[in-house]
Amino acid sequence: MAHRAVEAPRTVRKALSFSALNTVLAKLGSFLTGVVLARLLVPEDFGVFAVALVVLSAVLSMNELGVSLALVRWPGDPLRIAPTVTTISMGSSVLLYAVCWFGAPAFSAALGAPDATGVVRLLCVAVLIDGVTAAPAQLVNREFRQGVRLLSDVANLVVTTGVTVSLAATGHGAWSLGWGQLAGNVLAAVVLCRLTSMWPRPGFDRRQAAELLRFGLPLAGASLLVFAMLNVDYVVTGRVLGAVALGLYLQAFNLASWPVNVFSAIVRRVSLAAFSRVQDDPARRQEALARMVTVLAVPTLLVCLLLGLLALPLITTVYGEAWAGAAAALQFLAVLGVVRVFGELCYDFLVALGLSRSTLWLQGLWLGALVVALPVGALVGNIRGVAMAHAAVGLFVVLPAYLLVVARTGVSLRALGSALSMPLLGTCVAAMVVVGMRLVLPPSPVLLLTAGALGVLAYLPFVWPLRHQFRELG
Image (cartoon, rainbow, N blue to C red; front, top):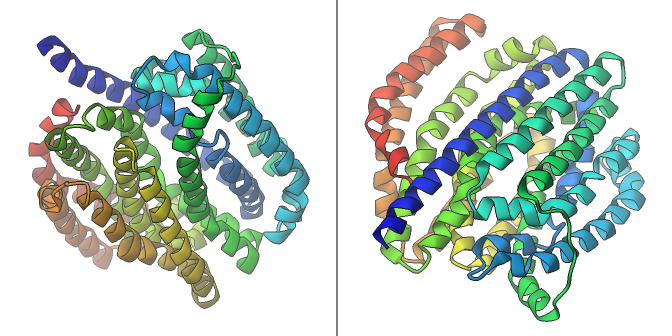
């Protein structure tokens, strides 16, 4: 038993290391590709692609009806339910792709980008691929085999980048983004199935299906609400402000999502399984949550601070003056990035405890507040107003609601606050340094590099003593 207790943290740390390497490589590659594409494409191309991404995100959020997550927390042999999971996943993906195909013209027109119809139909083929790989992907997460994910995702990155940049350079516009994404997804699916030796083997057990759907449907509903919450701003921006504004907003949102796509993504690949292991021990699950909060806070708070305070020099240095308008949204979306990182961690914690219905209500609250706030923001303040509304809802409505629900599970908010104290203090000091540099230097690459470096140096003394938290994670 003692040997097992030692091995569990080691397994989590090893998986977290692979996940970190995977995520850093993927996001660095995506970032560099995005820089190149920003020089080859125009904001309208990104706006058309954003419409396709909205549709894809919608169908992926409910594609396998939430049942695949049961493979991660199933108490017995997960291979026993894998055939039923595969059948449900593949069946739902076929039905949803049919909806995408026939609904693409109407949806694209509603968002002010009728030219997006073909790209929507192309990109949503990824739904079928997701249905095929749902079971092996979750079994990899359950077993902490993040090395497999690393190889699969690197293959995806290489193919996506090569195809996208090649097509963009030859004048294929938004289609280059769609074909690149699809080609990468196909190869990644083949690599994943090959390395796990788990090719699609459908089967069906009525009793298993009923249990899986009872677990999964609330999660699918919550995921659909997450999609709506994260994409209603695209819908409002495209509908009210047009494709060019949507392209600028998409670029800002992509940059603001870096903390979510990097730091949160690294932890989320192991957090659900890690929380599930201690779900019956209140003291250990509180300790696990506090530790993961600290690990996430250290990089997230600083990066979001720099994204927000240095938005204009960052945008113009990386993407060029043509994208300067995106900075108006980025400075507020950086705040939203913080909320999303900690919201996702709380979401995984609640799912691990079996509180999937609570997550459904929380996402519903988030969506409802955005439906009211975002149109007002768009009409009053263009993409800047949309970003301000999104950040305000997350900070003053959603984050307090998540903390309230987590506290009701027995977690001490004081303990979480203690875990955040040094990163928050360091963030305040770094903010004063960066603001001081903004008063001295005009927006430029010099300001970006100088203020960024000094902000990091001011932050490090507060968080360096916390480096042991990663070693103890698990």
